[in-house]
Amino acid sequence: MAGPKAPAARPLSPHLQIYRPMLTMMMSIAHRITGVGLYFGTVLLAWWLLAAASGPNGYAKFEWFAGSIIGRLILFGYTWALIHHMLGGIRHLIWDTGRGMGPSEREWLAAANLIGSIGITGLLWIFGLLAMGGPR
Amino acid sequence: MSEASLKHIRTPLARVRGRGAAHSGTGHFWRQRLTAVANIPLTIAVVVILVMLLGRNQAAAAQILGAPLVAIIMLLFIASITAHMRIGMQVVIEDYVHDETAKLILIMANTFFAIAVALVSAYGIFKLSFGV
Image (tube, rainbow over all chains, first blue to last red; front, side, top):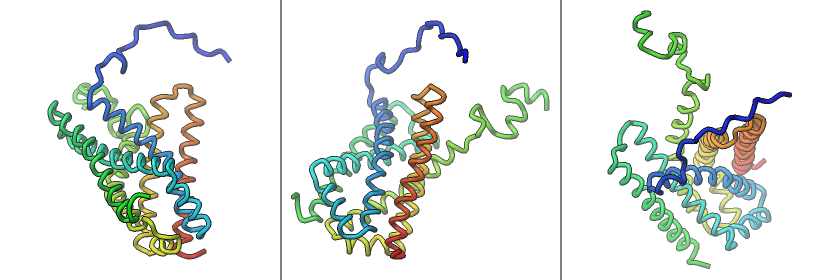
Protein backbone atom coordinates (compact mmCIF):
# COMPACT_ATOMS: atom_id res chain seq x y z
CA MET A 1 0.00 0.00 0.00
CA ALA A 2 1.41 3.33 -1.02
CA GLY A 3 1.60 5.57 2.01
CA PRO A 4 1.78 9.34 1.89
CA LYS A 5 5.18 10.89 1.14
CA ALA A 6 7.39 11.80 4.05
CA PRO A 7 6.45 15.33 5.16
CA ALA A 8 8.87 18.11 4.37
CA ALA A 9 11.03 19.25 7.28
CA ARG A 10 9.16 22.33 8.36
CA PRO A 11 10.03 24.54 11.32
CA LEU A 12 8.14 23.47 14.42
CA SER A 13 6.46 25.76 16.88
CA PRO A 14 8.24 26.12 20.23
CA HIS A 15 7.51 23.23 22.53
CA LEU A 16 7.86 22.49 26.25
CA GLN A 17 11.65 22.64 26.46
CA ILE A 18 11.67 26.23 25.18
CA TYR A 19 9.70 27.64 28.08
CA ARG A 20 10.86 28.38 31.59
CA PRO A 21 8.99 26.00 33.90
CA MET A 22 6.04 27.76 35.49
CA LEU A 23 3.81 26.66 38.33
CA THR A 24 0.63 26.64 36.25
CA MET A 25 2.36 24.62 33.52
CA MET A 26 3.73 22.12 36.04
CA MET A 27 0.28 21.78 37.59
CA SER A 28 -1.25 21.12 34.18
CA ILE A 29 1.30 18.34 33.61
CA ALA A 30 0.74 17.02 37.15
CA HIS A 31 -3.01 16.91 36.53
CA ARG A 32 -2.52 14.67 33.53
CA ILE A 33 0.11 12.45 35.19
CA THR A 34 -1.99 11.98 38.33
CA GLY A 35 -4.97 11.15 36.11
CA VAL A 36 -2.99 8.43 34.33
CA GLY A 37 -1.71 7.12 37.67
CA LEU A 38 -5.22 6.98 39.10
CA TYR A 39 -6.37 5.14 35.97
CA PHE A 40 -3.94 2.25 36.43
CA GLY A 41 -4.36 2.33 40.20
CA THR A 42 -8.01 1.34 39.87
CA VAL A 43 -6.66 -2.20 39.45
CA LEU A 44 -5.89 -2.03 43.19
CA LEU A 45 -9.46 -0.91 43.93
CA ALA A 46 -10.84 -3.85 41.94
CA TRP A 47 -8.40 -6.26 43.63
CA TRP A 48 -9.32 -4.95 47.09
CA LEU A 49 -13.08 -5.33 46.51
CA LEU A 50 -12.65 -8.77 44.97
CA ALA A 51 -10.39 -9.79 47.88
CA ALA A 52 -12.95 -8.60 50.44
CA ALA A 53 -15.62 -10.62 48.62
CA SER A 54 -13.45 -13.73 48.28
CA GLY A 55 -12.91 -14.35 52.01
CA PRO A 56 -10.23 -14.12 54.71
CA ASN A 57 -7.42 -15.74 52.67
CA GLY A 58 -7.81 -13.46 49.69
CA TYR A 59 -8.13 -10.44 51.94
CA ALA A 60 -4.98 -11.41 53.83
CA LYS A 61 -3.05 -11.39 50.54
CA PHE A 62 -4.25 -7.87 49.78
CA GLU A 63 -3.48 -6.74 53.31
CA TRP A 64 0.01 -8.20 53.05
CA PHE A 65 0.58 -6.15 49.89
CA ALA A 66 -1.02 -2.98 51.30
CA GLY A 67 1.04 -3.26 54.48
CA SER A 68 4.37 -3.82 52.73
CA ILE A 69 6.73 -0.91 52.16
CA ILE A 70 6.09 -0.90 48.41
CA GLY A 71 2.35 -1.17 49.01
CA ARG A 72 2.41 1.69 51.50
CA LEU A 73 4.39 3.88 49.10
CA ILE A 74 1.98 3.14 46.26
CA LEU A 75 -1.05 3.84 48.46
CA PHE A 76 0.52 7.07 49.75
CA GLY A 77 1.22 8.18 46.17
CA TYR A 78 -2.28 7.15 45.20
CA THR A 79 -3.79 9.21 48.01
CA TRP A 80 -1.86 12.28 46.92
CA ALA A 81 -2.71 11.71 43.22
CA LEU A 82 -6.39 11.34 44.08
CA ILE A 83 -6.57 14.50 46.19
CA HIS A 84 -4.40 16.46 43.77
CA HIS A 85 -6.45 15.43 40.74
CA MET A 86 -9.69 16.20 42.58
CA LEU A 87 -8.54 19.69 43.62
CA GLY A 88 -7.18 20.23 40.10
CA GLY A 89 -10.56 19.16 38.74
CA ILE A 90 -12.31 21.68 40.98
CA ARG A 91 -9.91 24.31 39.59
CA HIS A 92 -10.92 23.30 36.07
CA LEU A 93 -14.61 23.50 36.98
CA ILE A 94 -14.02 27.04 38.33
CA TRP A 95 -12.33 27.93 35.03
CA ASP A 96 -15.30 26.44 33.15
CA THR A 97 -17.43 29.21 34.63
CA GLY A 98 -15.00 31.78 33.22
CA ARG A 99 -13.65 32.75 36.64
CA GLY A 100 -10.14 32.55 38.05
CA MET A 101 -8.20 33.05 34.82
CA GLY A 102 -6.44 36.31 35.67
CA PRO A 103 -2.64 36.22 36.14
CA SER A 104 -2.69 36.45 39.94
CA GLU A 105 -5.81 34.28 40.30
CA ARG A 106 -4.44 31.38 38.32
CA GLU A 107 -1.13 31.49 40.22
CA TRP A 108 -3.02 31.56 43.50
CA LEU A 109 -5.24 28.66 42.43
CA ALA A 110 -2.25 26.57 41.33
CA ALA A 111 -0.45 27.17 44.63
CA ALA A 112 -3.61 26.41 46.63
CA ASN A 113 -4.04 23.20 44.66
CA LEU A 114 -0.52 22.00 45.47
CA ILE A 115 -0.50 23.08 49.12
CA GLY A 116 -4.01 21.70 49.60
CA SER A 117 -3.20 18.31 48.09
CA ILE A 118 -0.03 17.87 50.17
CA GLY A 119 -1.77 19.08 53.33
CA ILE A 120 -4.88 16.91 52.96
CA THR A 121 -2.79 13.84 52.03
CA GLY A 122 -0.61 14.35 55.11
CA LEU A 123 -3.63 14.79 57.39
CA LEU A 124 -5.37 11.72 55.98
CA TRP A 125 -2.28 9.56 56.53
CA ILE A 126 -1.63 10.86 60.04
CA PHE A 127 -5.27 10.19 60.87
CA GLY A 128 -5.19 6.80 59.16
CA LEU A 129 -2.01 5.64 60.90
CA LEU A 130 -3.38 6.78 64.26
CA ALA A 131 -6.63 4.90 63.56
CA MET A 132 -4.59 1.78 62.86
CA GLY A 133 -2.74 2.11 66.16
CA GLY A 134 0.35 4.04 65.15
CA PRO A 135 3.01 3.39 62.51
CA ARG A 136 4.07 -0.22 62.20
CA MET B 1 -30.97 34.32 7.02
CA SER B 2 -28.23 34.27 4.41
CA GLU B 3 -26.78 37.56 5.56
CA ALA B 4 -26.72 36.43 9.19
CA SER B 5 -25.12 33.08 8.37
CA LEU B 6 -22.33 34.71 6.40
CA LYS B 7 -20.98 36.13 9.63
CA HIS B 8 -20.23 32.60 10.83
CA ILE B 9 -17.71 30.16 9.46
CA ARG B 10 -19.93 27.22 10.32
CA THR B 11 -22.58 26.11 7.88
CA PRO B 12 -26.19 26.49 9.01
CA LEU B 13 -26.57 22.68 9.14
CA ALA B 14 -23.53 22.28 11.41
CA ARG B 15 -24.94 24.98 13.67
CA VAL B 16 -28.31 23.24 13.82
CA ARG B 17 -26.67 19.94 14.72
CA GLY B 18 -24.24 21.57 17.11
CA ARG B 19 -21.37 19.33 16.12
CA GLY B 20 -17.79 20.27 15.44
CA ALA B 21 -14.78 18.71 13.80
CA ALA B 22 -14.97 15.54 15.90
CA HIS B 23 -18.50 14.84 14.55
CA SER B 24 -19.67 14.08 18.03
CA GLY B 25 -20.47 17.54 19.29
CA THR B 26 -19.69 18.38 22.87
CA GLY B 27 -20.85 15.05 24.30
CA HIS B 28 -17.34 14.03 25.28
CA PHE B 29 -16.62 17.38 26.95
CA TRP B 30 -19.94 17.36 28.76
CA ARG B 31 -19.65 13.78 30.07
CA GLN B 32 -16.17 14.56 31.42
CA ARG B 33 -17.60 17.49 33.41
CA LEU B 34 -20.67 15.55 34.51
CA THR B 35 -18.60 12.66 35.88
CA ALA B 36 -16.07 15.11 37.36
CA VAL B 37 -18.82 16.81 39.38
CA ALA B 38 -20.19 13.42 40.47
CA ASN B 39 -16.70 12.24 41.42
CA ILE B 40 -16.22 14.99 44.03
CA PRO B 41 -18.86 13.97 46.63
CA LEU B 42 -18.46 10.28 45.77
CA THR B 43 -14.67 10.38 46.29
CA ILE B 44 -15.06 12.17 49.62
CA ALA B 45 -17.61 9.53 50.72
CA VAL B 46 -15.35 6.67 49.61
CA VAL B 47 -12.34 8.16 51.43
CA VAL B 48 -14.49 8.26 54.60
CA ILE B 49 -15.49 4.61 54.02
CA LEU B 50 -11.84 3.61 53.49
CA VAL B 51 -10.74 5.33 56.70
CA MET B 52 -13.56 3.49 58.54
CA LEU B 53 -12.23 0.19 57.19
CA LEU B 54 -8.58 0.72 58.14
CA GLY B 55 -7.18 -2.03 60.32
CA ARG B 56 -10.38 -4.09 60.26
CA ASN B 57 -10.35 -7.77 59.35
CA GLN B 58 -12.10 -9.28 56.34
CA ALA B 59 -15.31 -10.12 58.20
CA ALA B 60 -15.75 -6.54 59.42
CA ALA B 61 -14.75 -5.08 56.04
CA ALA B 62 -17.18 -7.39 54.24
CA GLN B 63 -19.99 -6.44 56.60
CA ILE B 64 -19.43 -2.69 56.13
CA LEU B 65 -18.95 -2.93 52.35
CA GLY B 66 -22.10 -5.04 52.01
CA ALA B 67 -24.29 -2.56 53.89
CA PRO B 68 -26.82 -1.04 51.45
CA LEU B 69 -25.75 2.62 51.68
CA VAL B 70 -22.03 1.82 51.50
CA ALA B 71 -22.55 -0.62 48.60
CA ILE B 72 -24.63 1.91 46.64
CA ILE B 73 -22.04 4.67 47.18
CA MET B 74 -19.28 2.29 46.06
CA LEU B 75 -21.23 1.32 42.93
CA LEU B 76 -21.95 4.95 42.02
CA PHE B 77 -18.28 5.80 42.64
CA ILE B 78 -17.08 2.97 40.40
CA ALA B 79 -19.51 3.84 37.62
CA SER B 80 -18.53 7.51 37.70
CA ILE B 81 -14.75 7.11 37.96
CA THR B 82 -14.49 4.42 35.28
CA ALA B 83 -16.54 6.54 32.85
CA HIS B 84 -14.40 9.59 33.72
CA MET B 85 -11.06 7.78 33.41
CA ARG B 86 -12.03 6.21 30.10
CA ILE B 87 -12.69 9.62 28.53
CA GLY B 88 -9.56 11.09 30.09
CA MET B 89 -7.29 8.29 28.87
CA GLN B 90 -8.80 8.55 25.40
CA VAL B 91 -7.76 12.20 25.26
CA VAL B 92 -4.24 11.27 26.38
CA ILE B 93 -4.03 8.56 23.69
CA GLU B 94 -5.31 10.93 21.01
CA ASP B 95 -2.72 13.51 22.06
CA TYR B 96 0.34 11.27 21.93
CA VAL B 97 -0.36 8.34 19.59
CA HIS B 98 -0.43 9.46 15.98
CA ASP B 99 -0.28 6.11 14.21
CA GLU B 100 -3.88 5.40 13.23
CA THR B 101 -3.81 1.63 13.85
CA ALA B 102 -2.03 1.90 17.20
CA LYS B 103 -4.40 4.67 18.23
CA LEU B 104 -7.51 2.61 17.45
CA ILE B 105 -6.11 -0.45 19.24
CA LEU B 106 -5.25 1.61 22.33
CA ILE B 107 -8.65 3.33 22.37
CA MET B 108 -10.28 -0.12 22.24
CA ALA B 109 -7.97 -1.45 24.98
CA ASN B 110 -8.84 1.63 27.02
CA THR B 111 -12.55 0.82 26.83
CA PHE B 112 -11.93 -2.84 27.68
CA PHE B 113 -9.82 -1.86 30.69
CA ALA B 114 -12.39 0.61 32.03
CA ILE B 115 -15.23 -1.91 31.65
CA ALA B 116 -13.15 -4.71 33.22
CA VAL B 117 -12.30 -2.59 36.27
CA ALA B 118 -15.93 -1.51 36.60
CA LEU B 119 -17.33 -5.04 36.32
CA VAL B 120 -14.78 -6.73 38.59
CA SER B 121 -15.34 -4.05 41.25
CA ALA B 122 -19.12 -4.22 40.89
CA TYR B 123 -18.99 -8.03 41.10
CA GLY B 124 -17.11 -7.77 44.38
CA ILE B 125 -19.66 -5.37 45.84
CA PHE B 126 -22.65 -7.40 44.66
CA LYS B 127 -21.10 -10.54 46.12
CA LEU B 128 -20.61 -8.76 49.45
CA SER B 129 -24.16 -7.41 49.37
CA PHE B 130 -26.02 -10.54 48.34
CA GLY B 131 -23.57 -13.21 49.50
CA VAL B 132 -23.55 -15.10 46.21
